[in-house]
Image 1 (cartoon, helix red, strand yellow):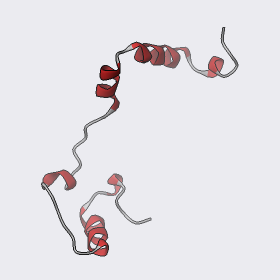
Image 2 (image 1 turned 60 degrees about the vertical axis):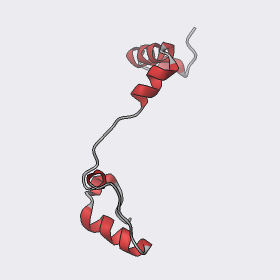
Image 3 (image 1 turned 90 degrees about the horizontal axis):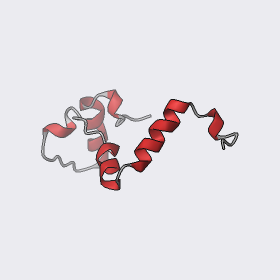
Length: 72
């Protein structure tokens, strides 16, 4: 029986959730993370900075805004 809360969930979303919940945990974990190449960040094995200010300045000058490393 639908409760008021579940009756507001579209049927296709509810069915997708139910199908996902029946999958084994290992399968759910495999699908839980999206691997995305992060430009500049993933292009070097490591970077080091002497100060946090240097790191922040480097982020602002080198990373795309959509990565979210800029200052607010």
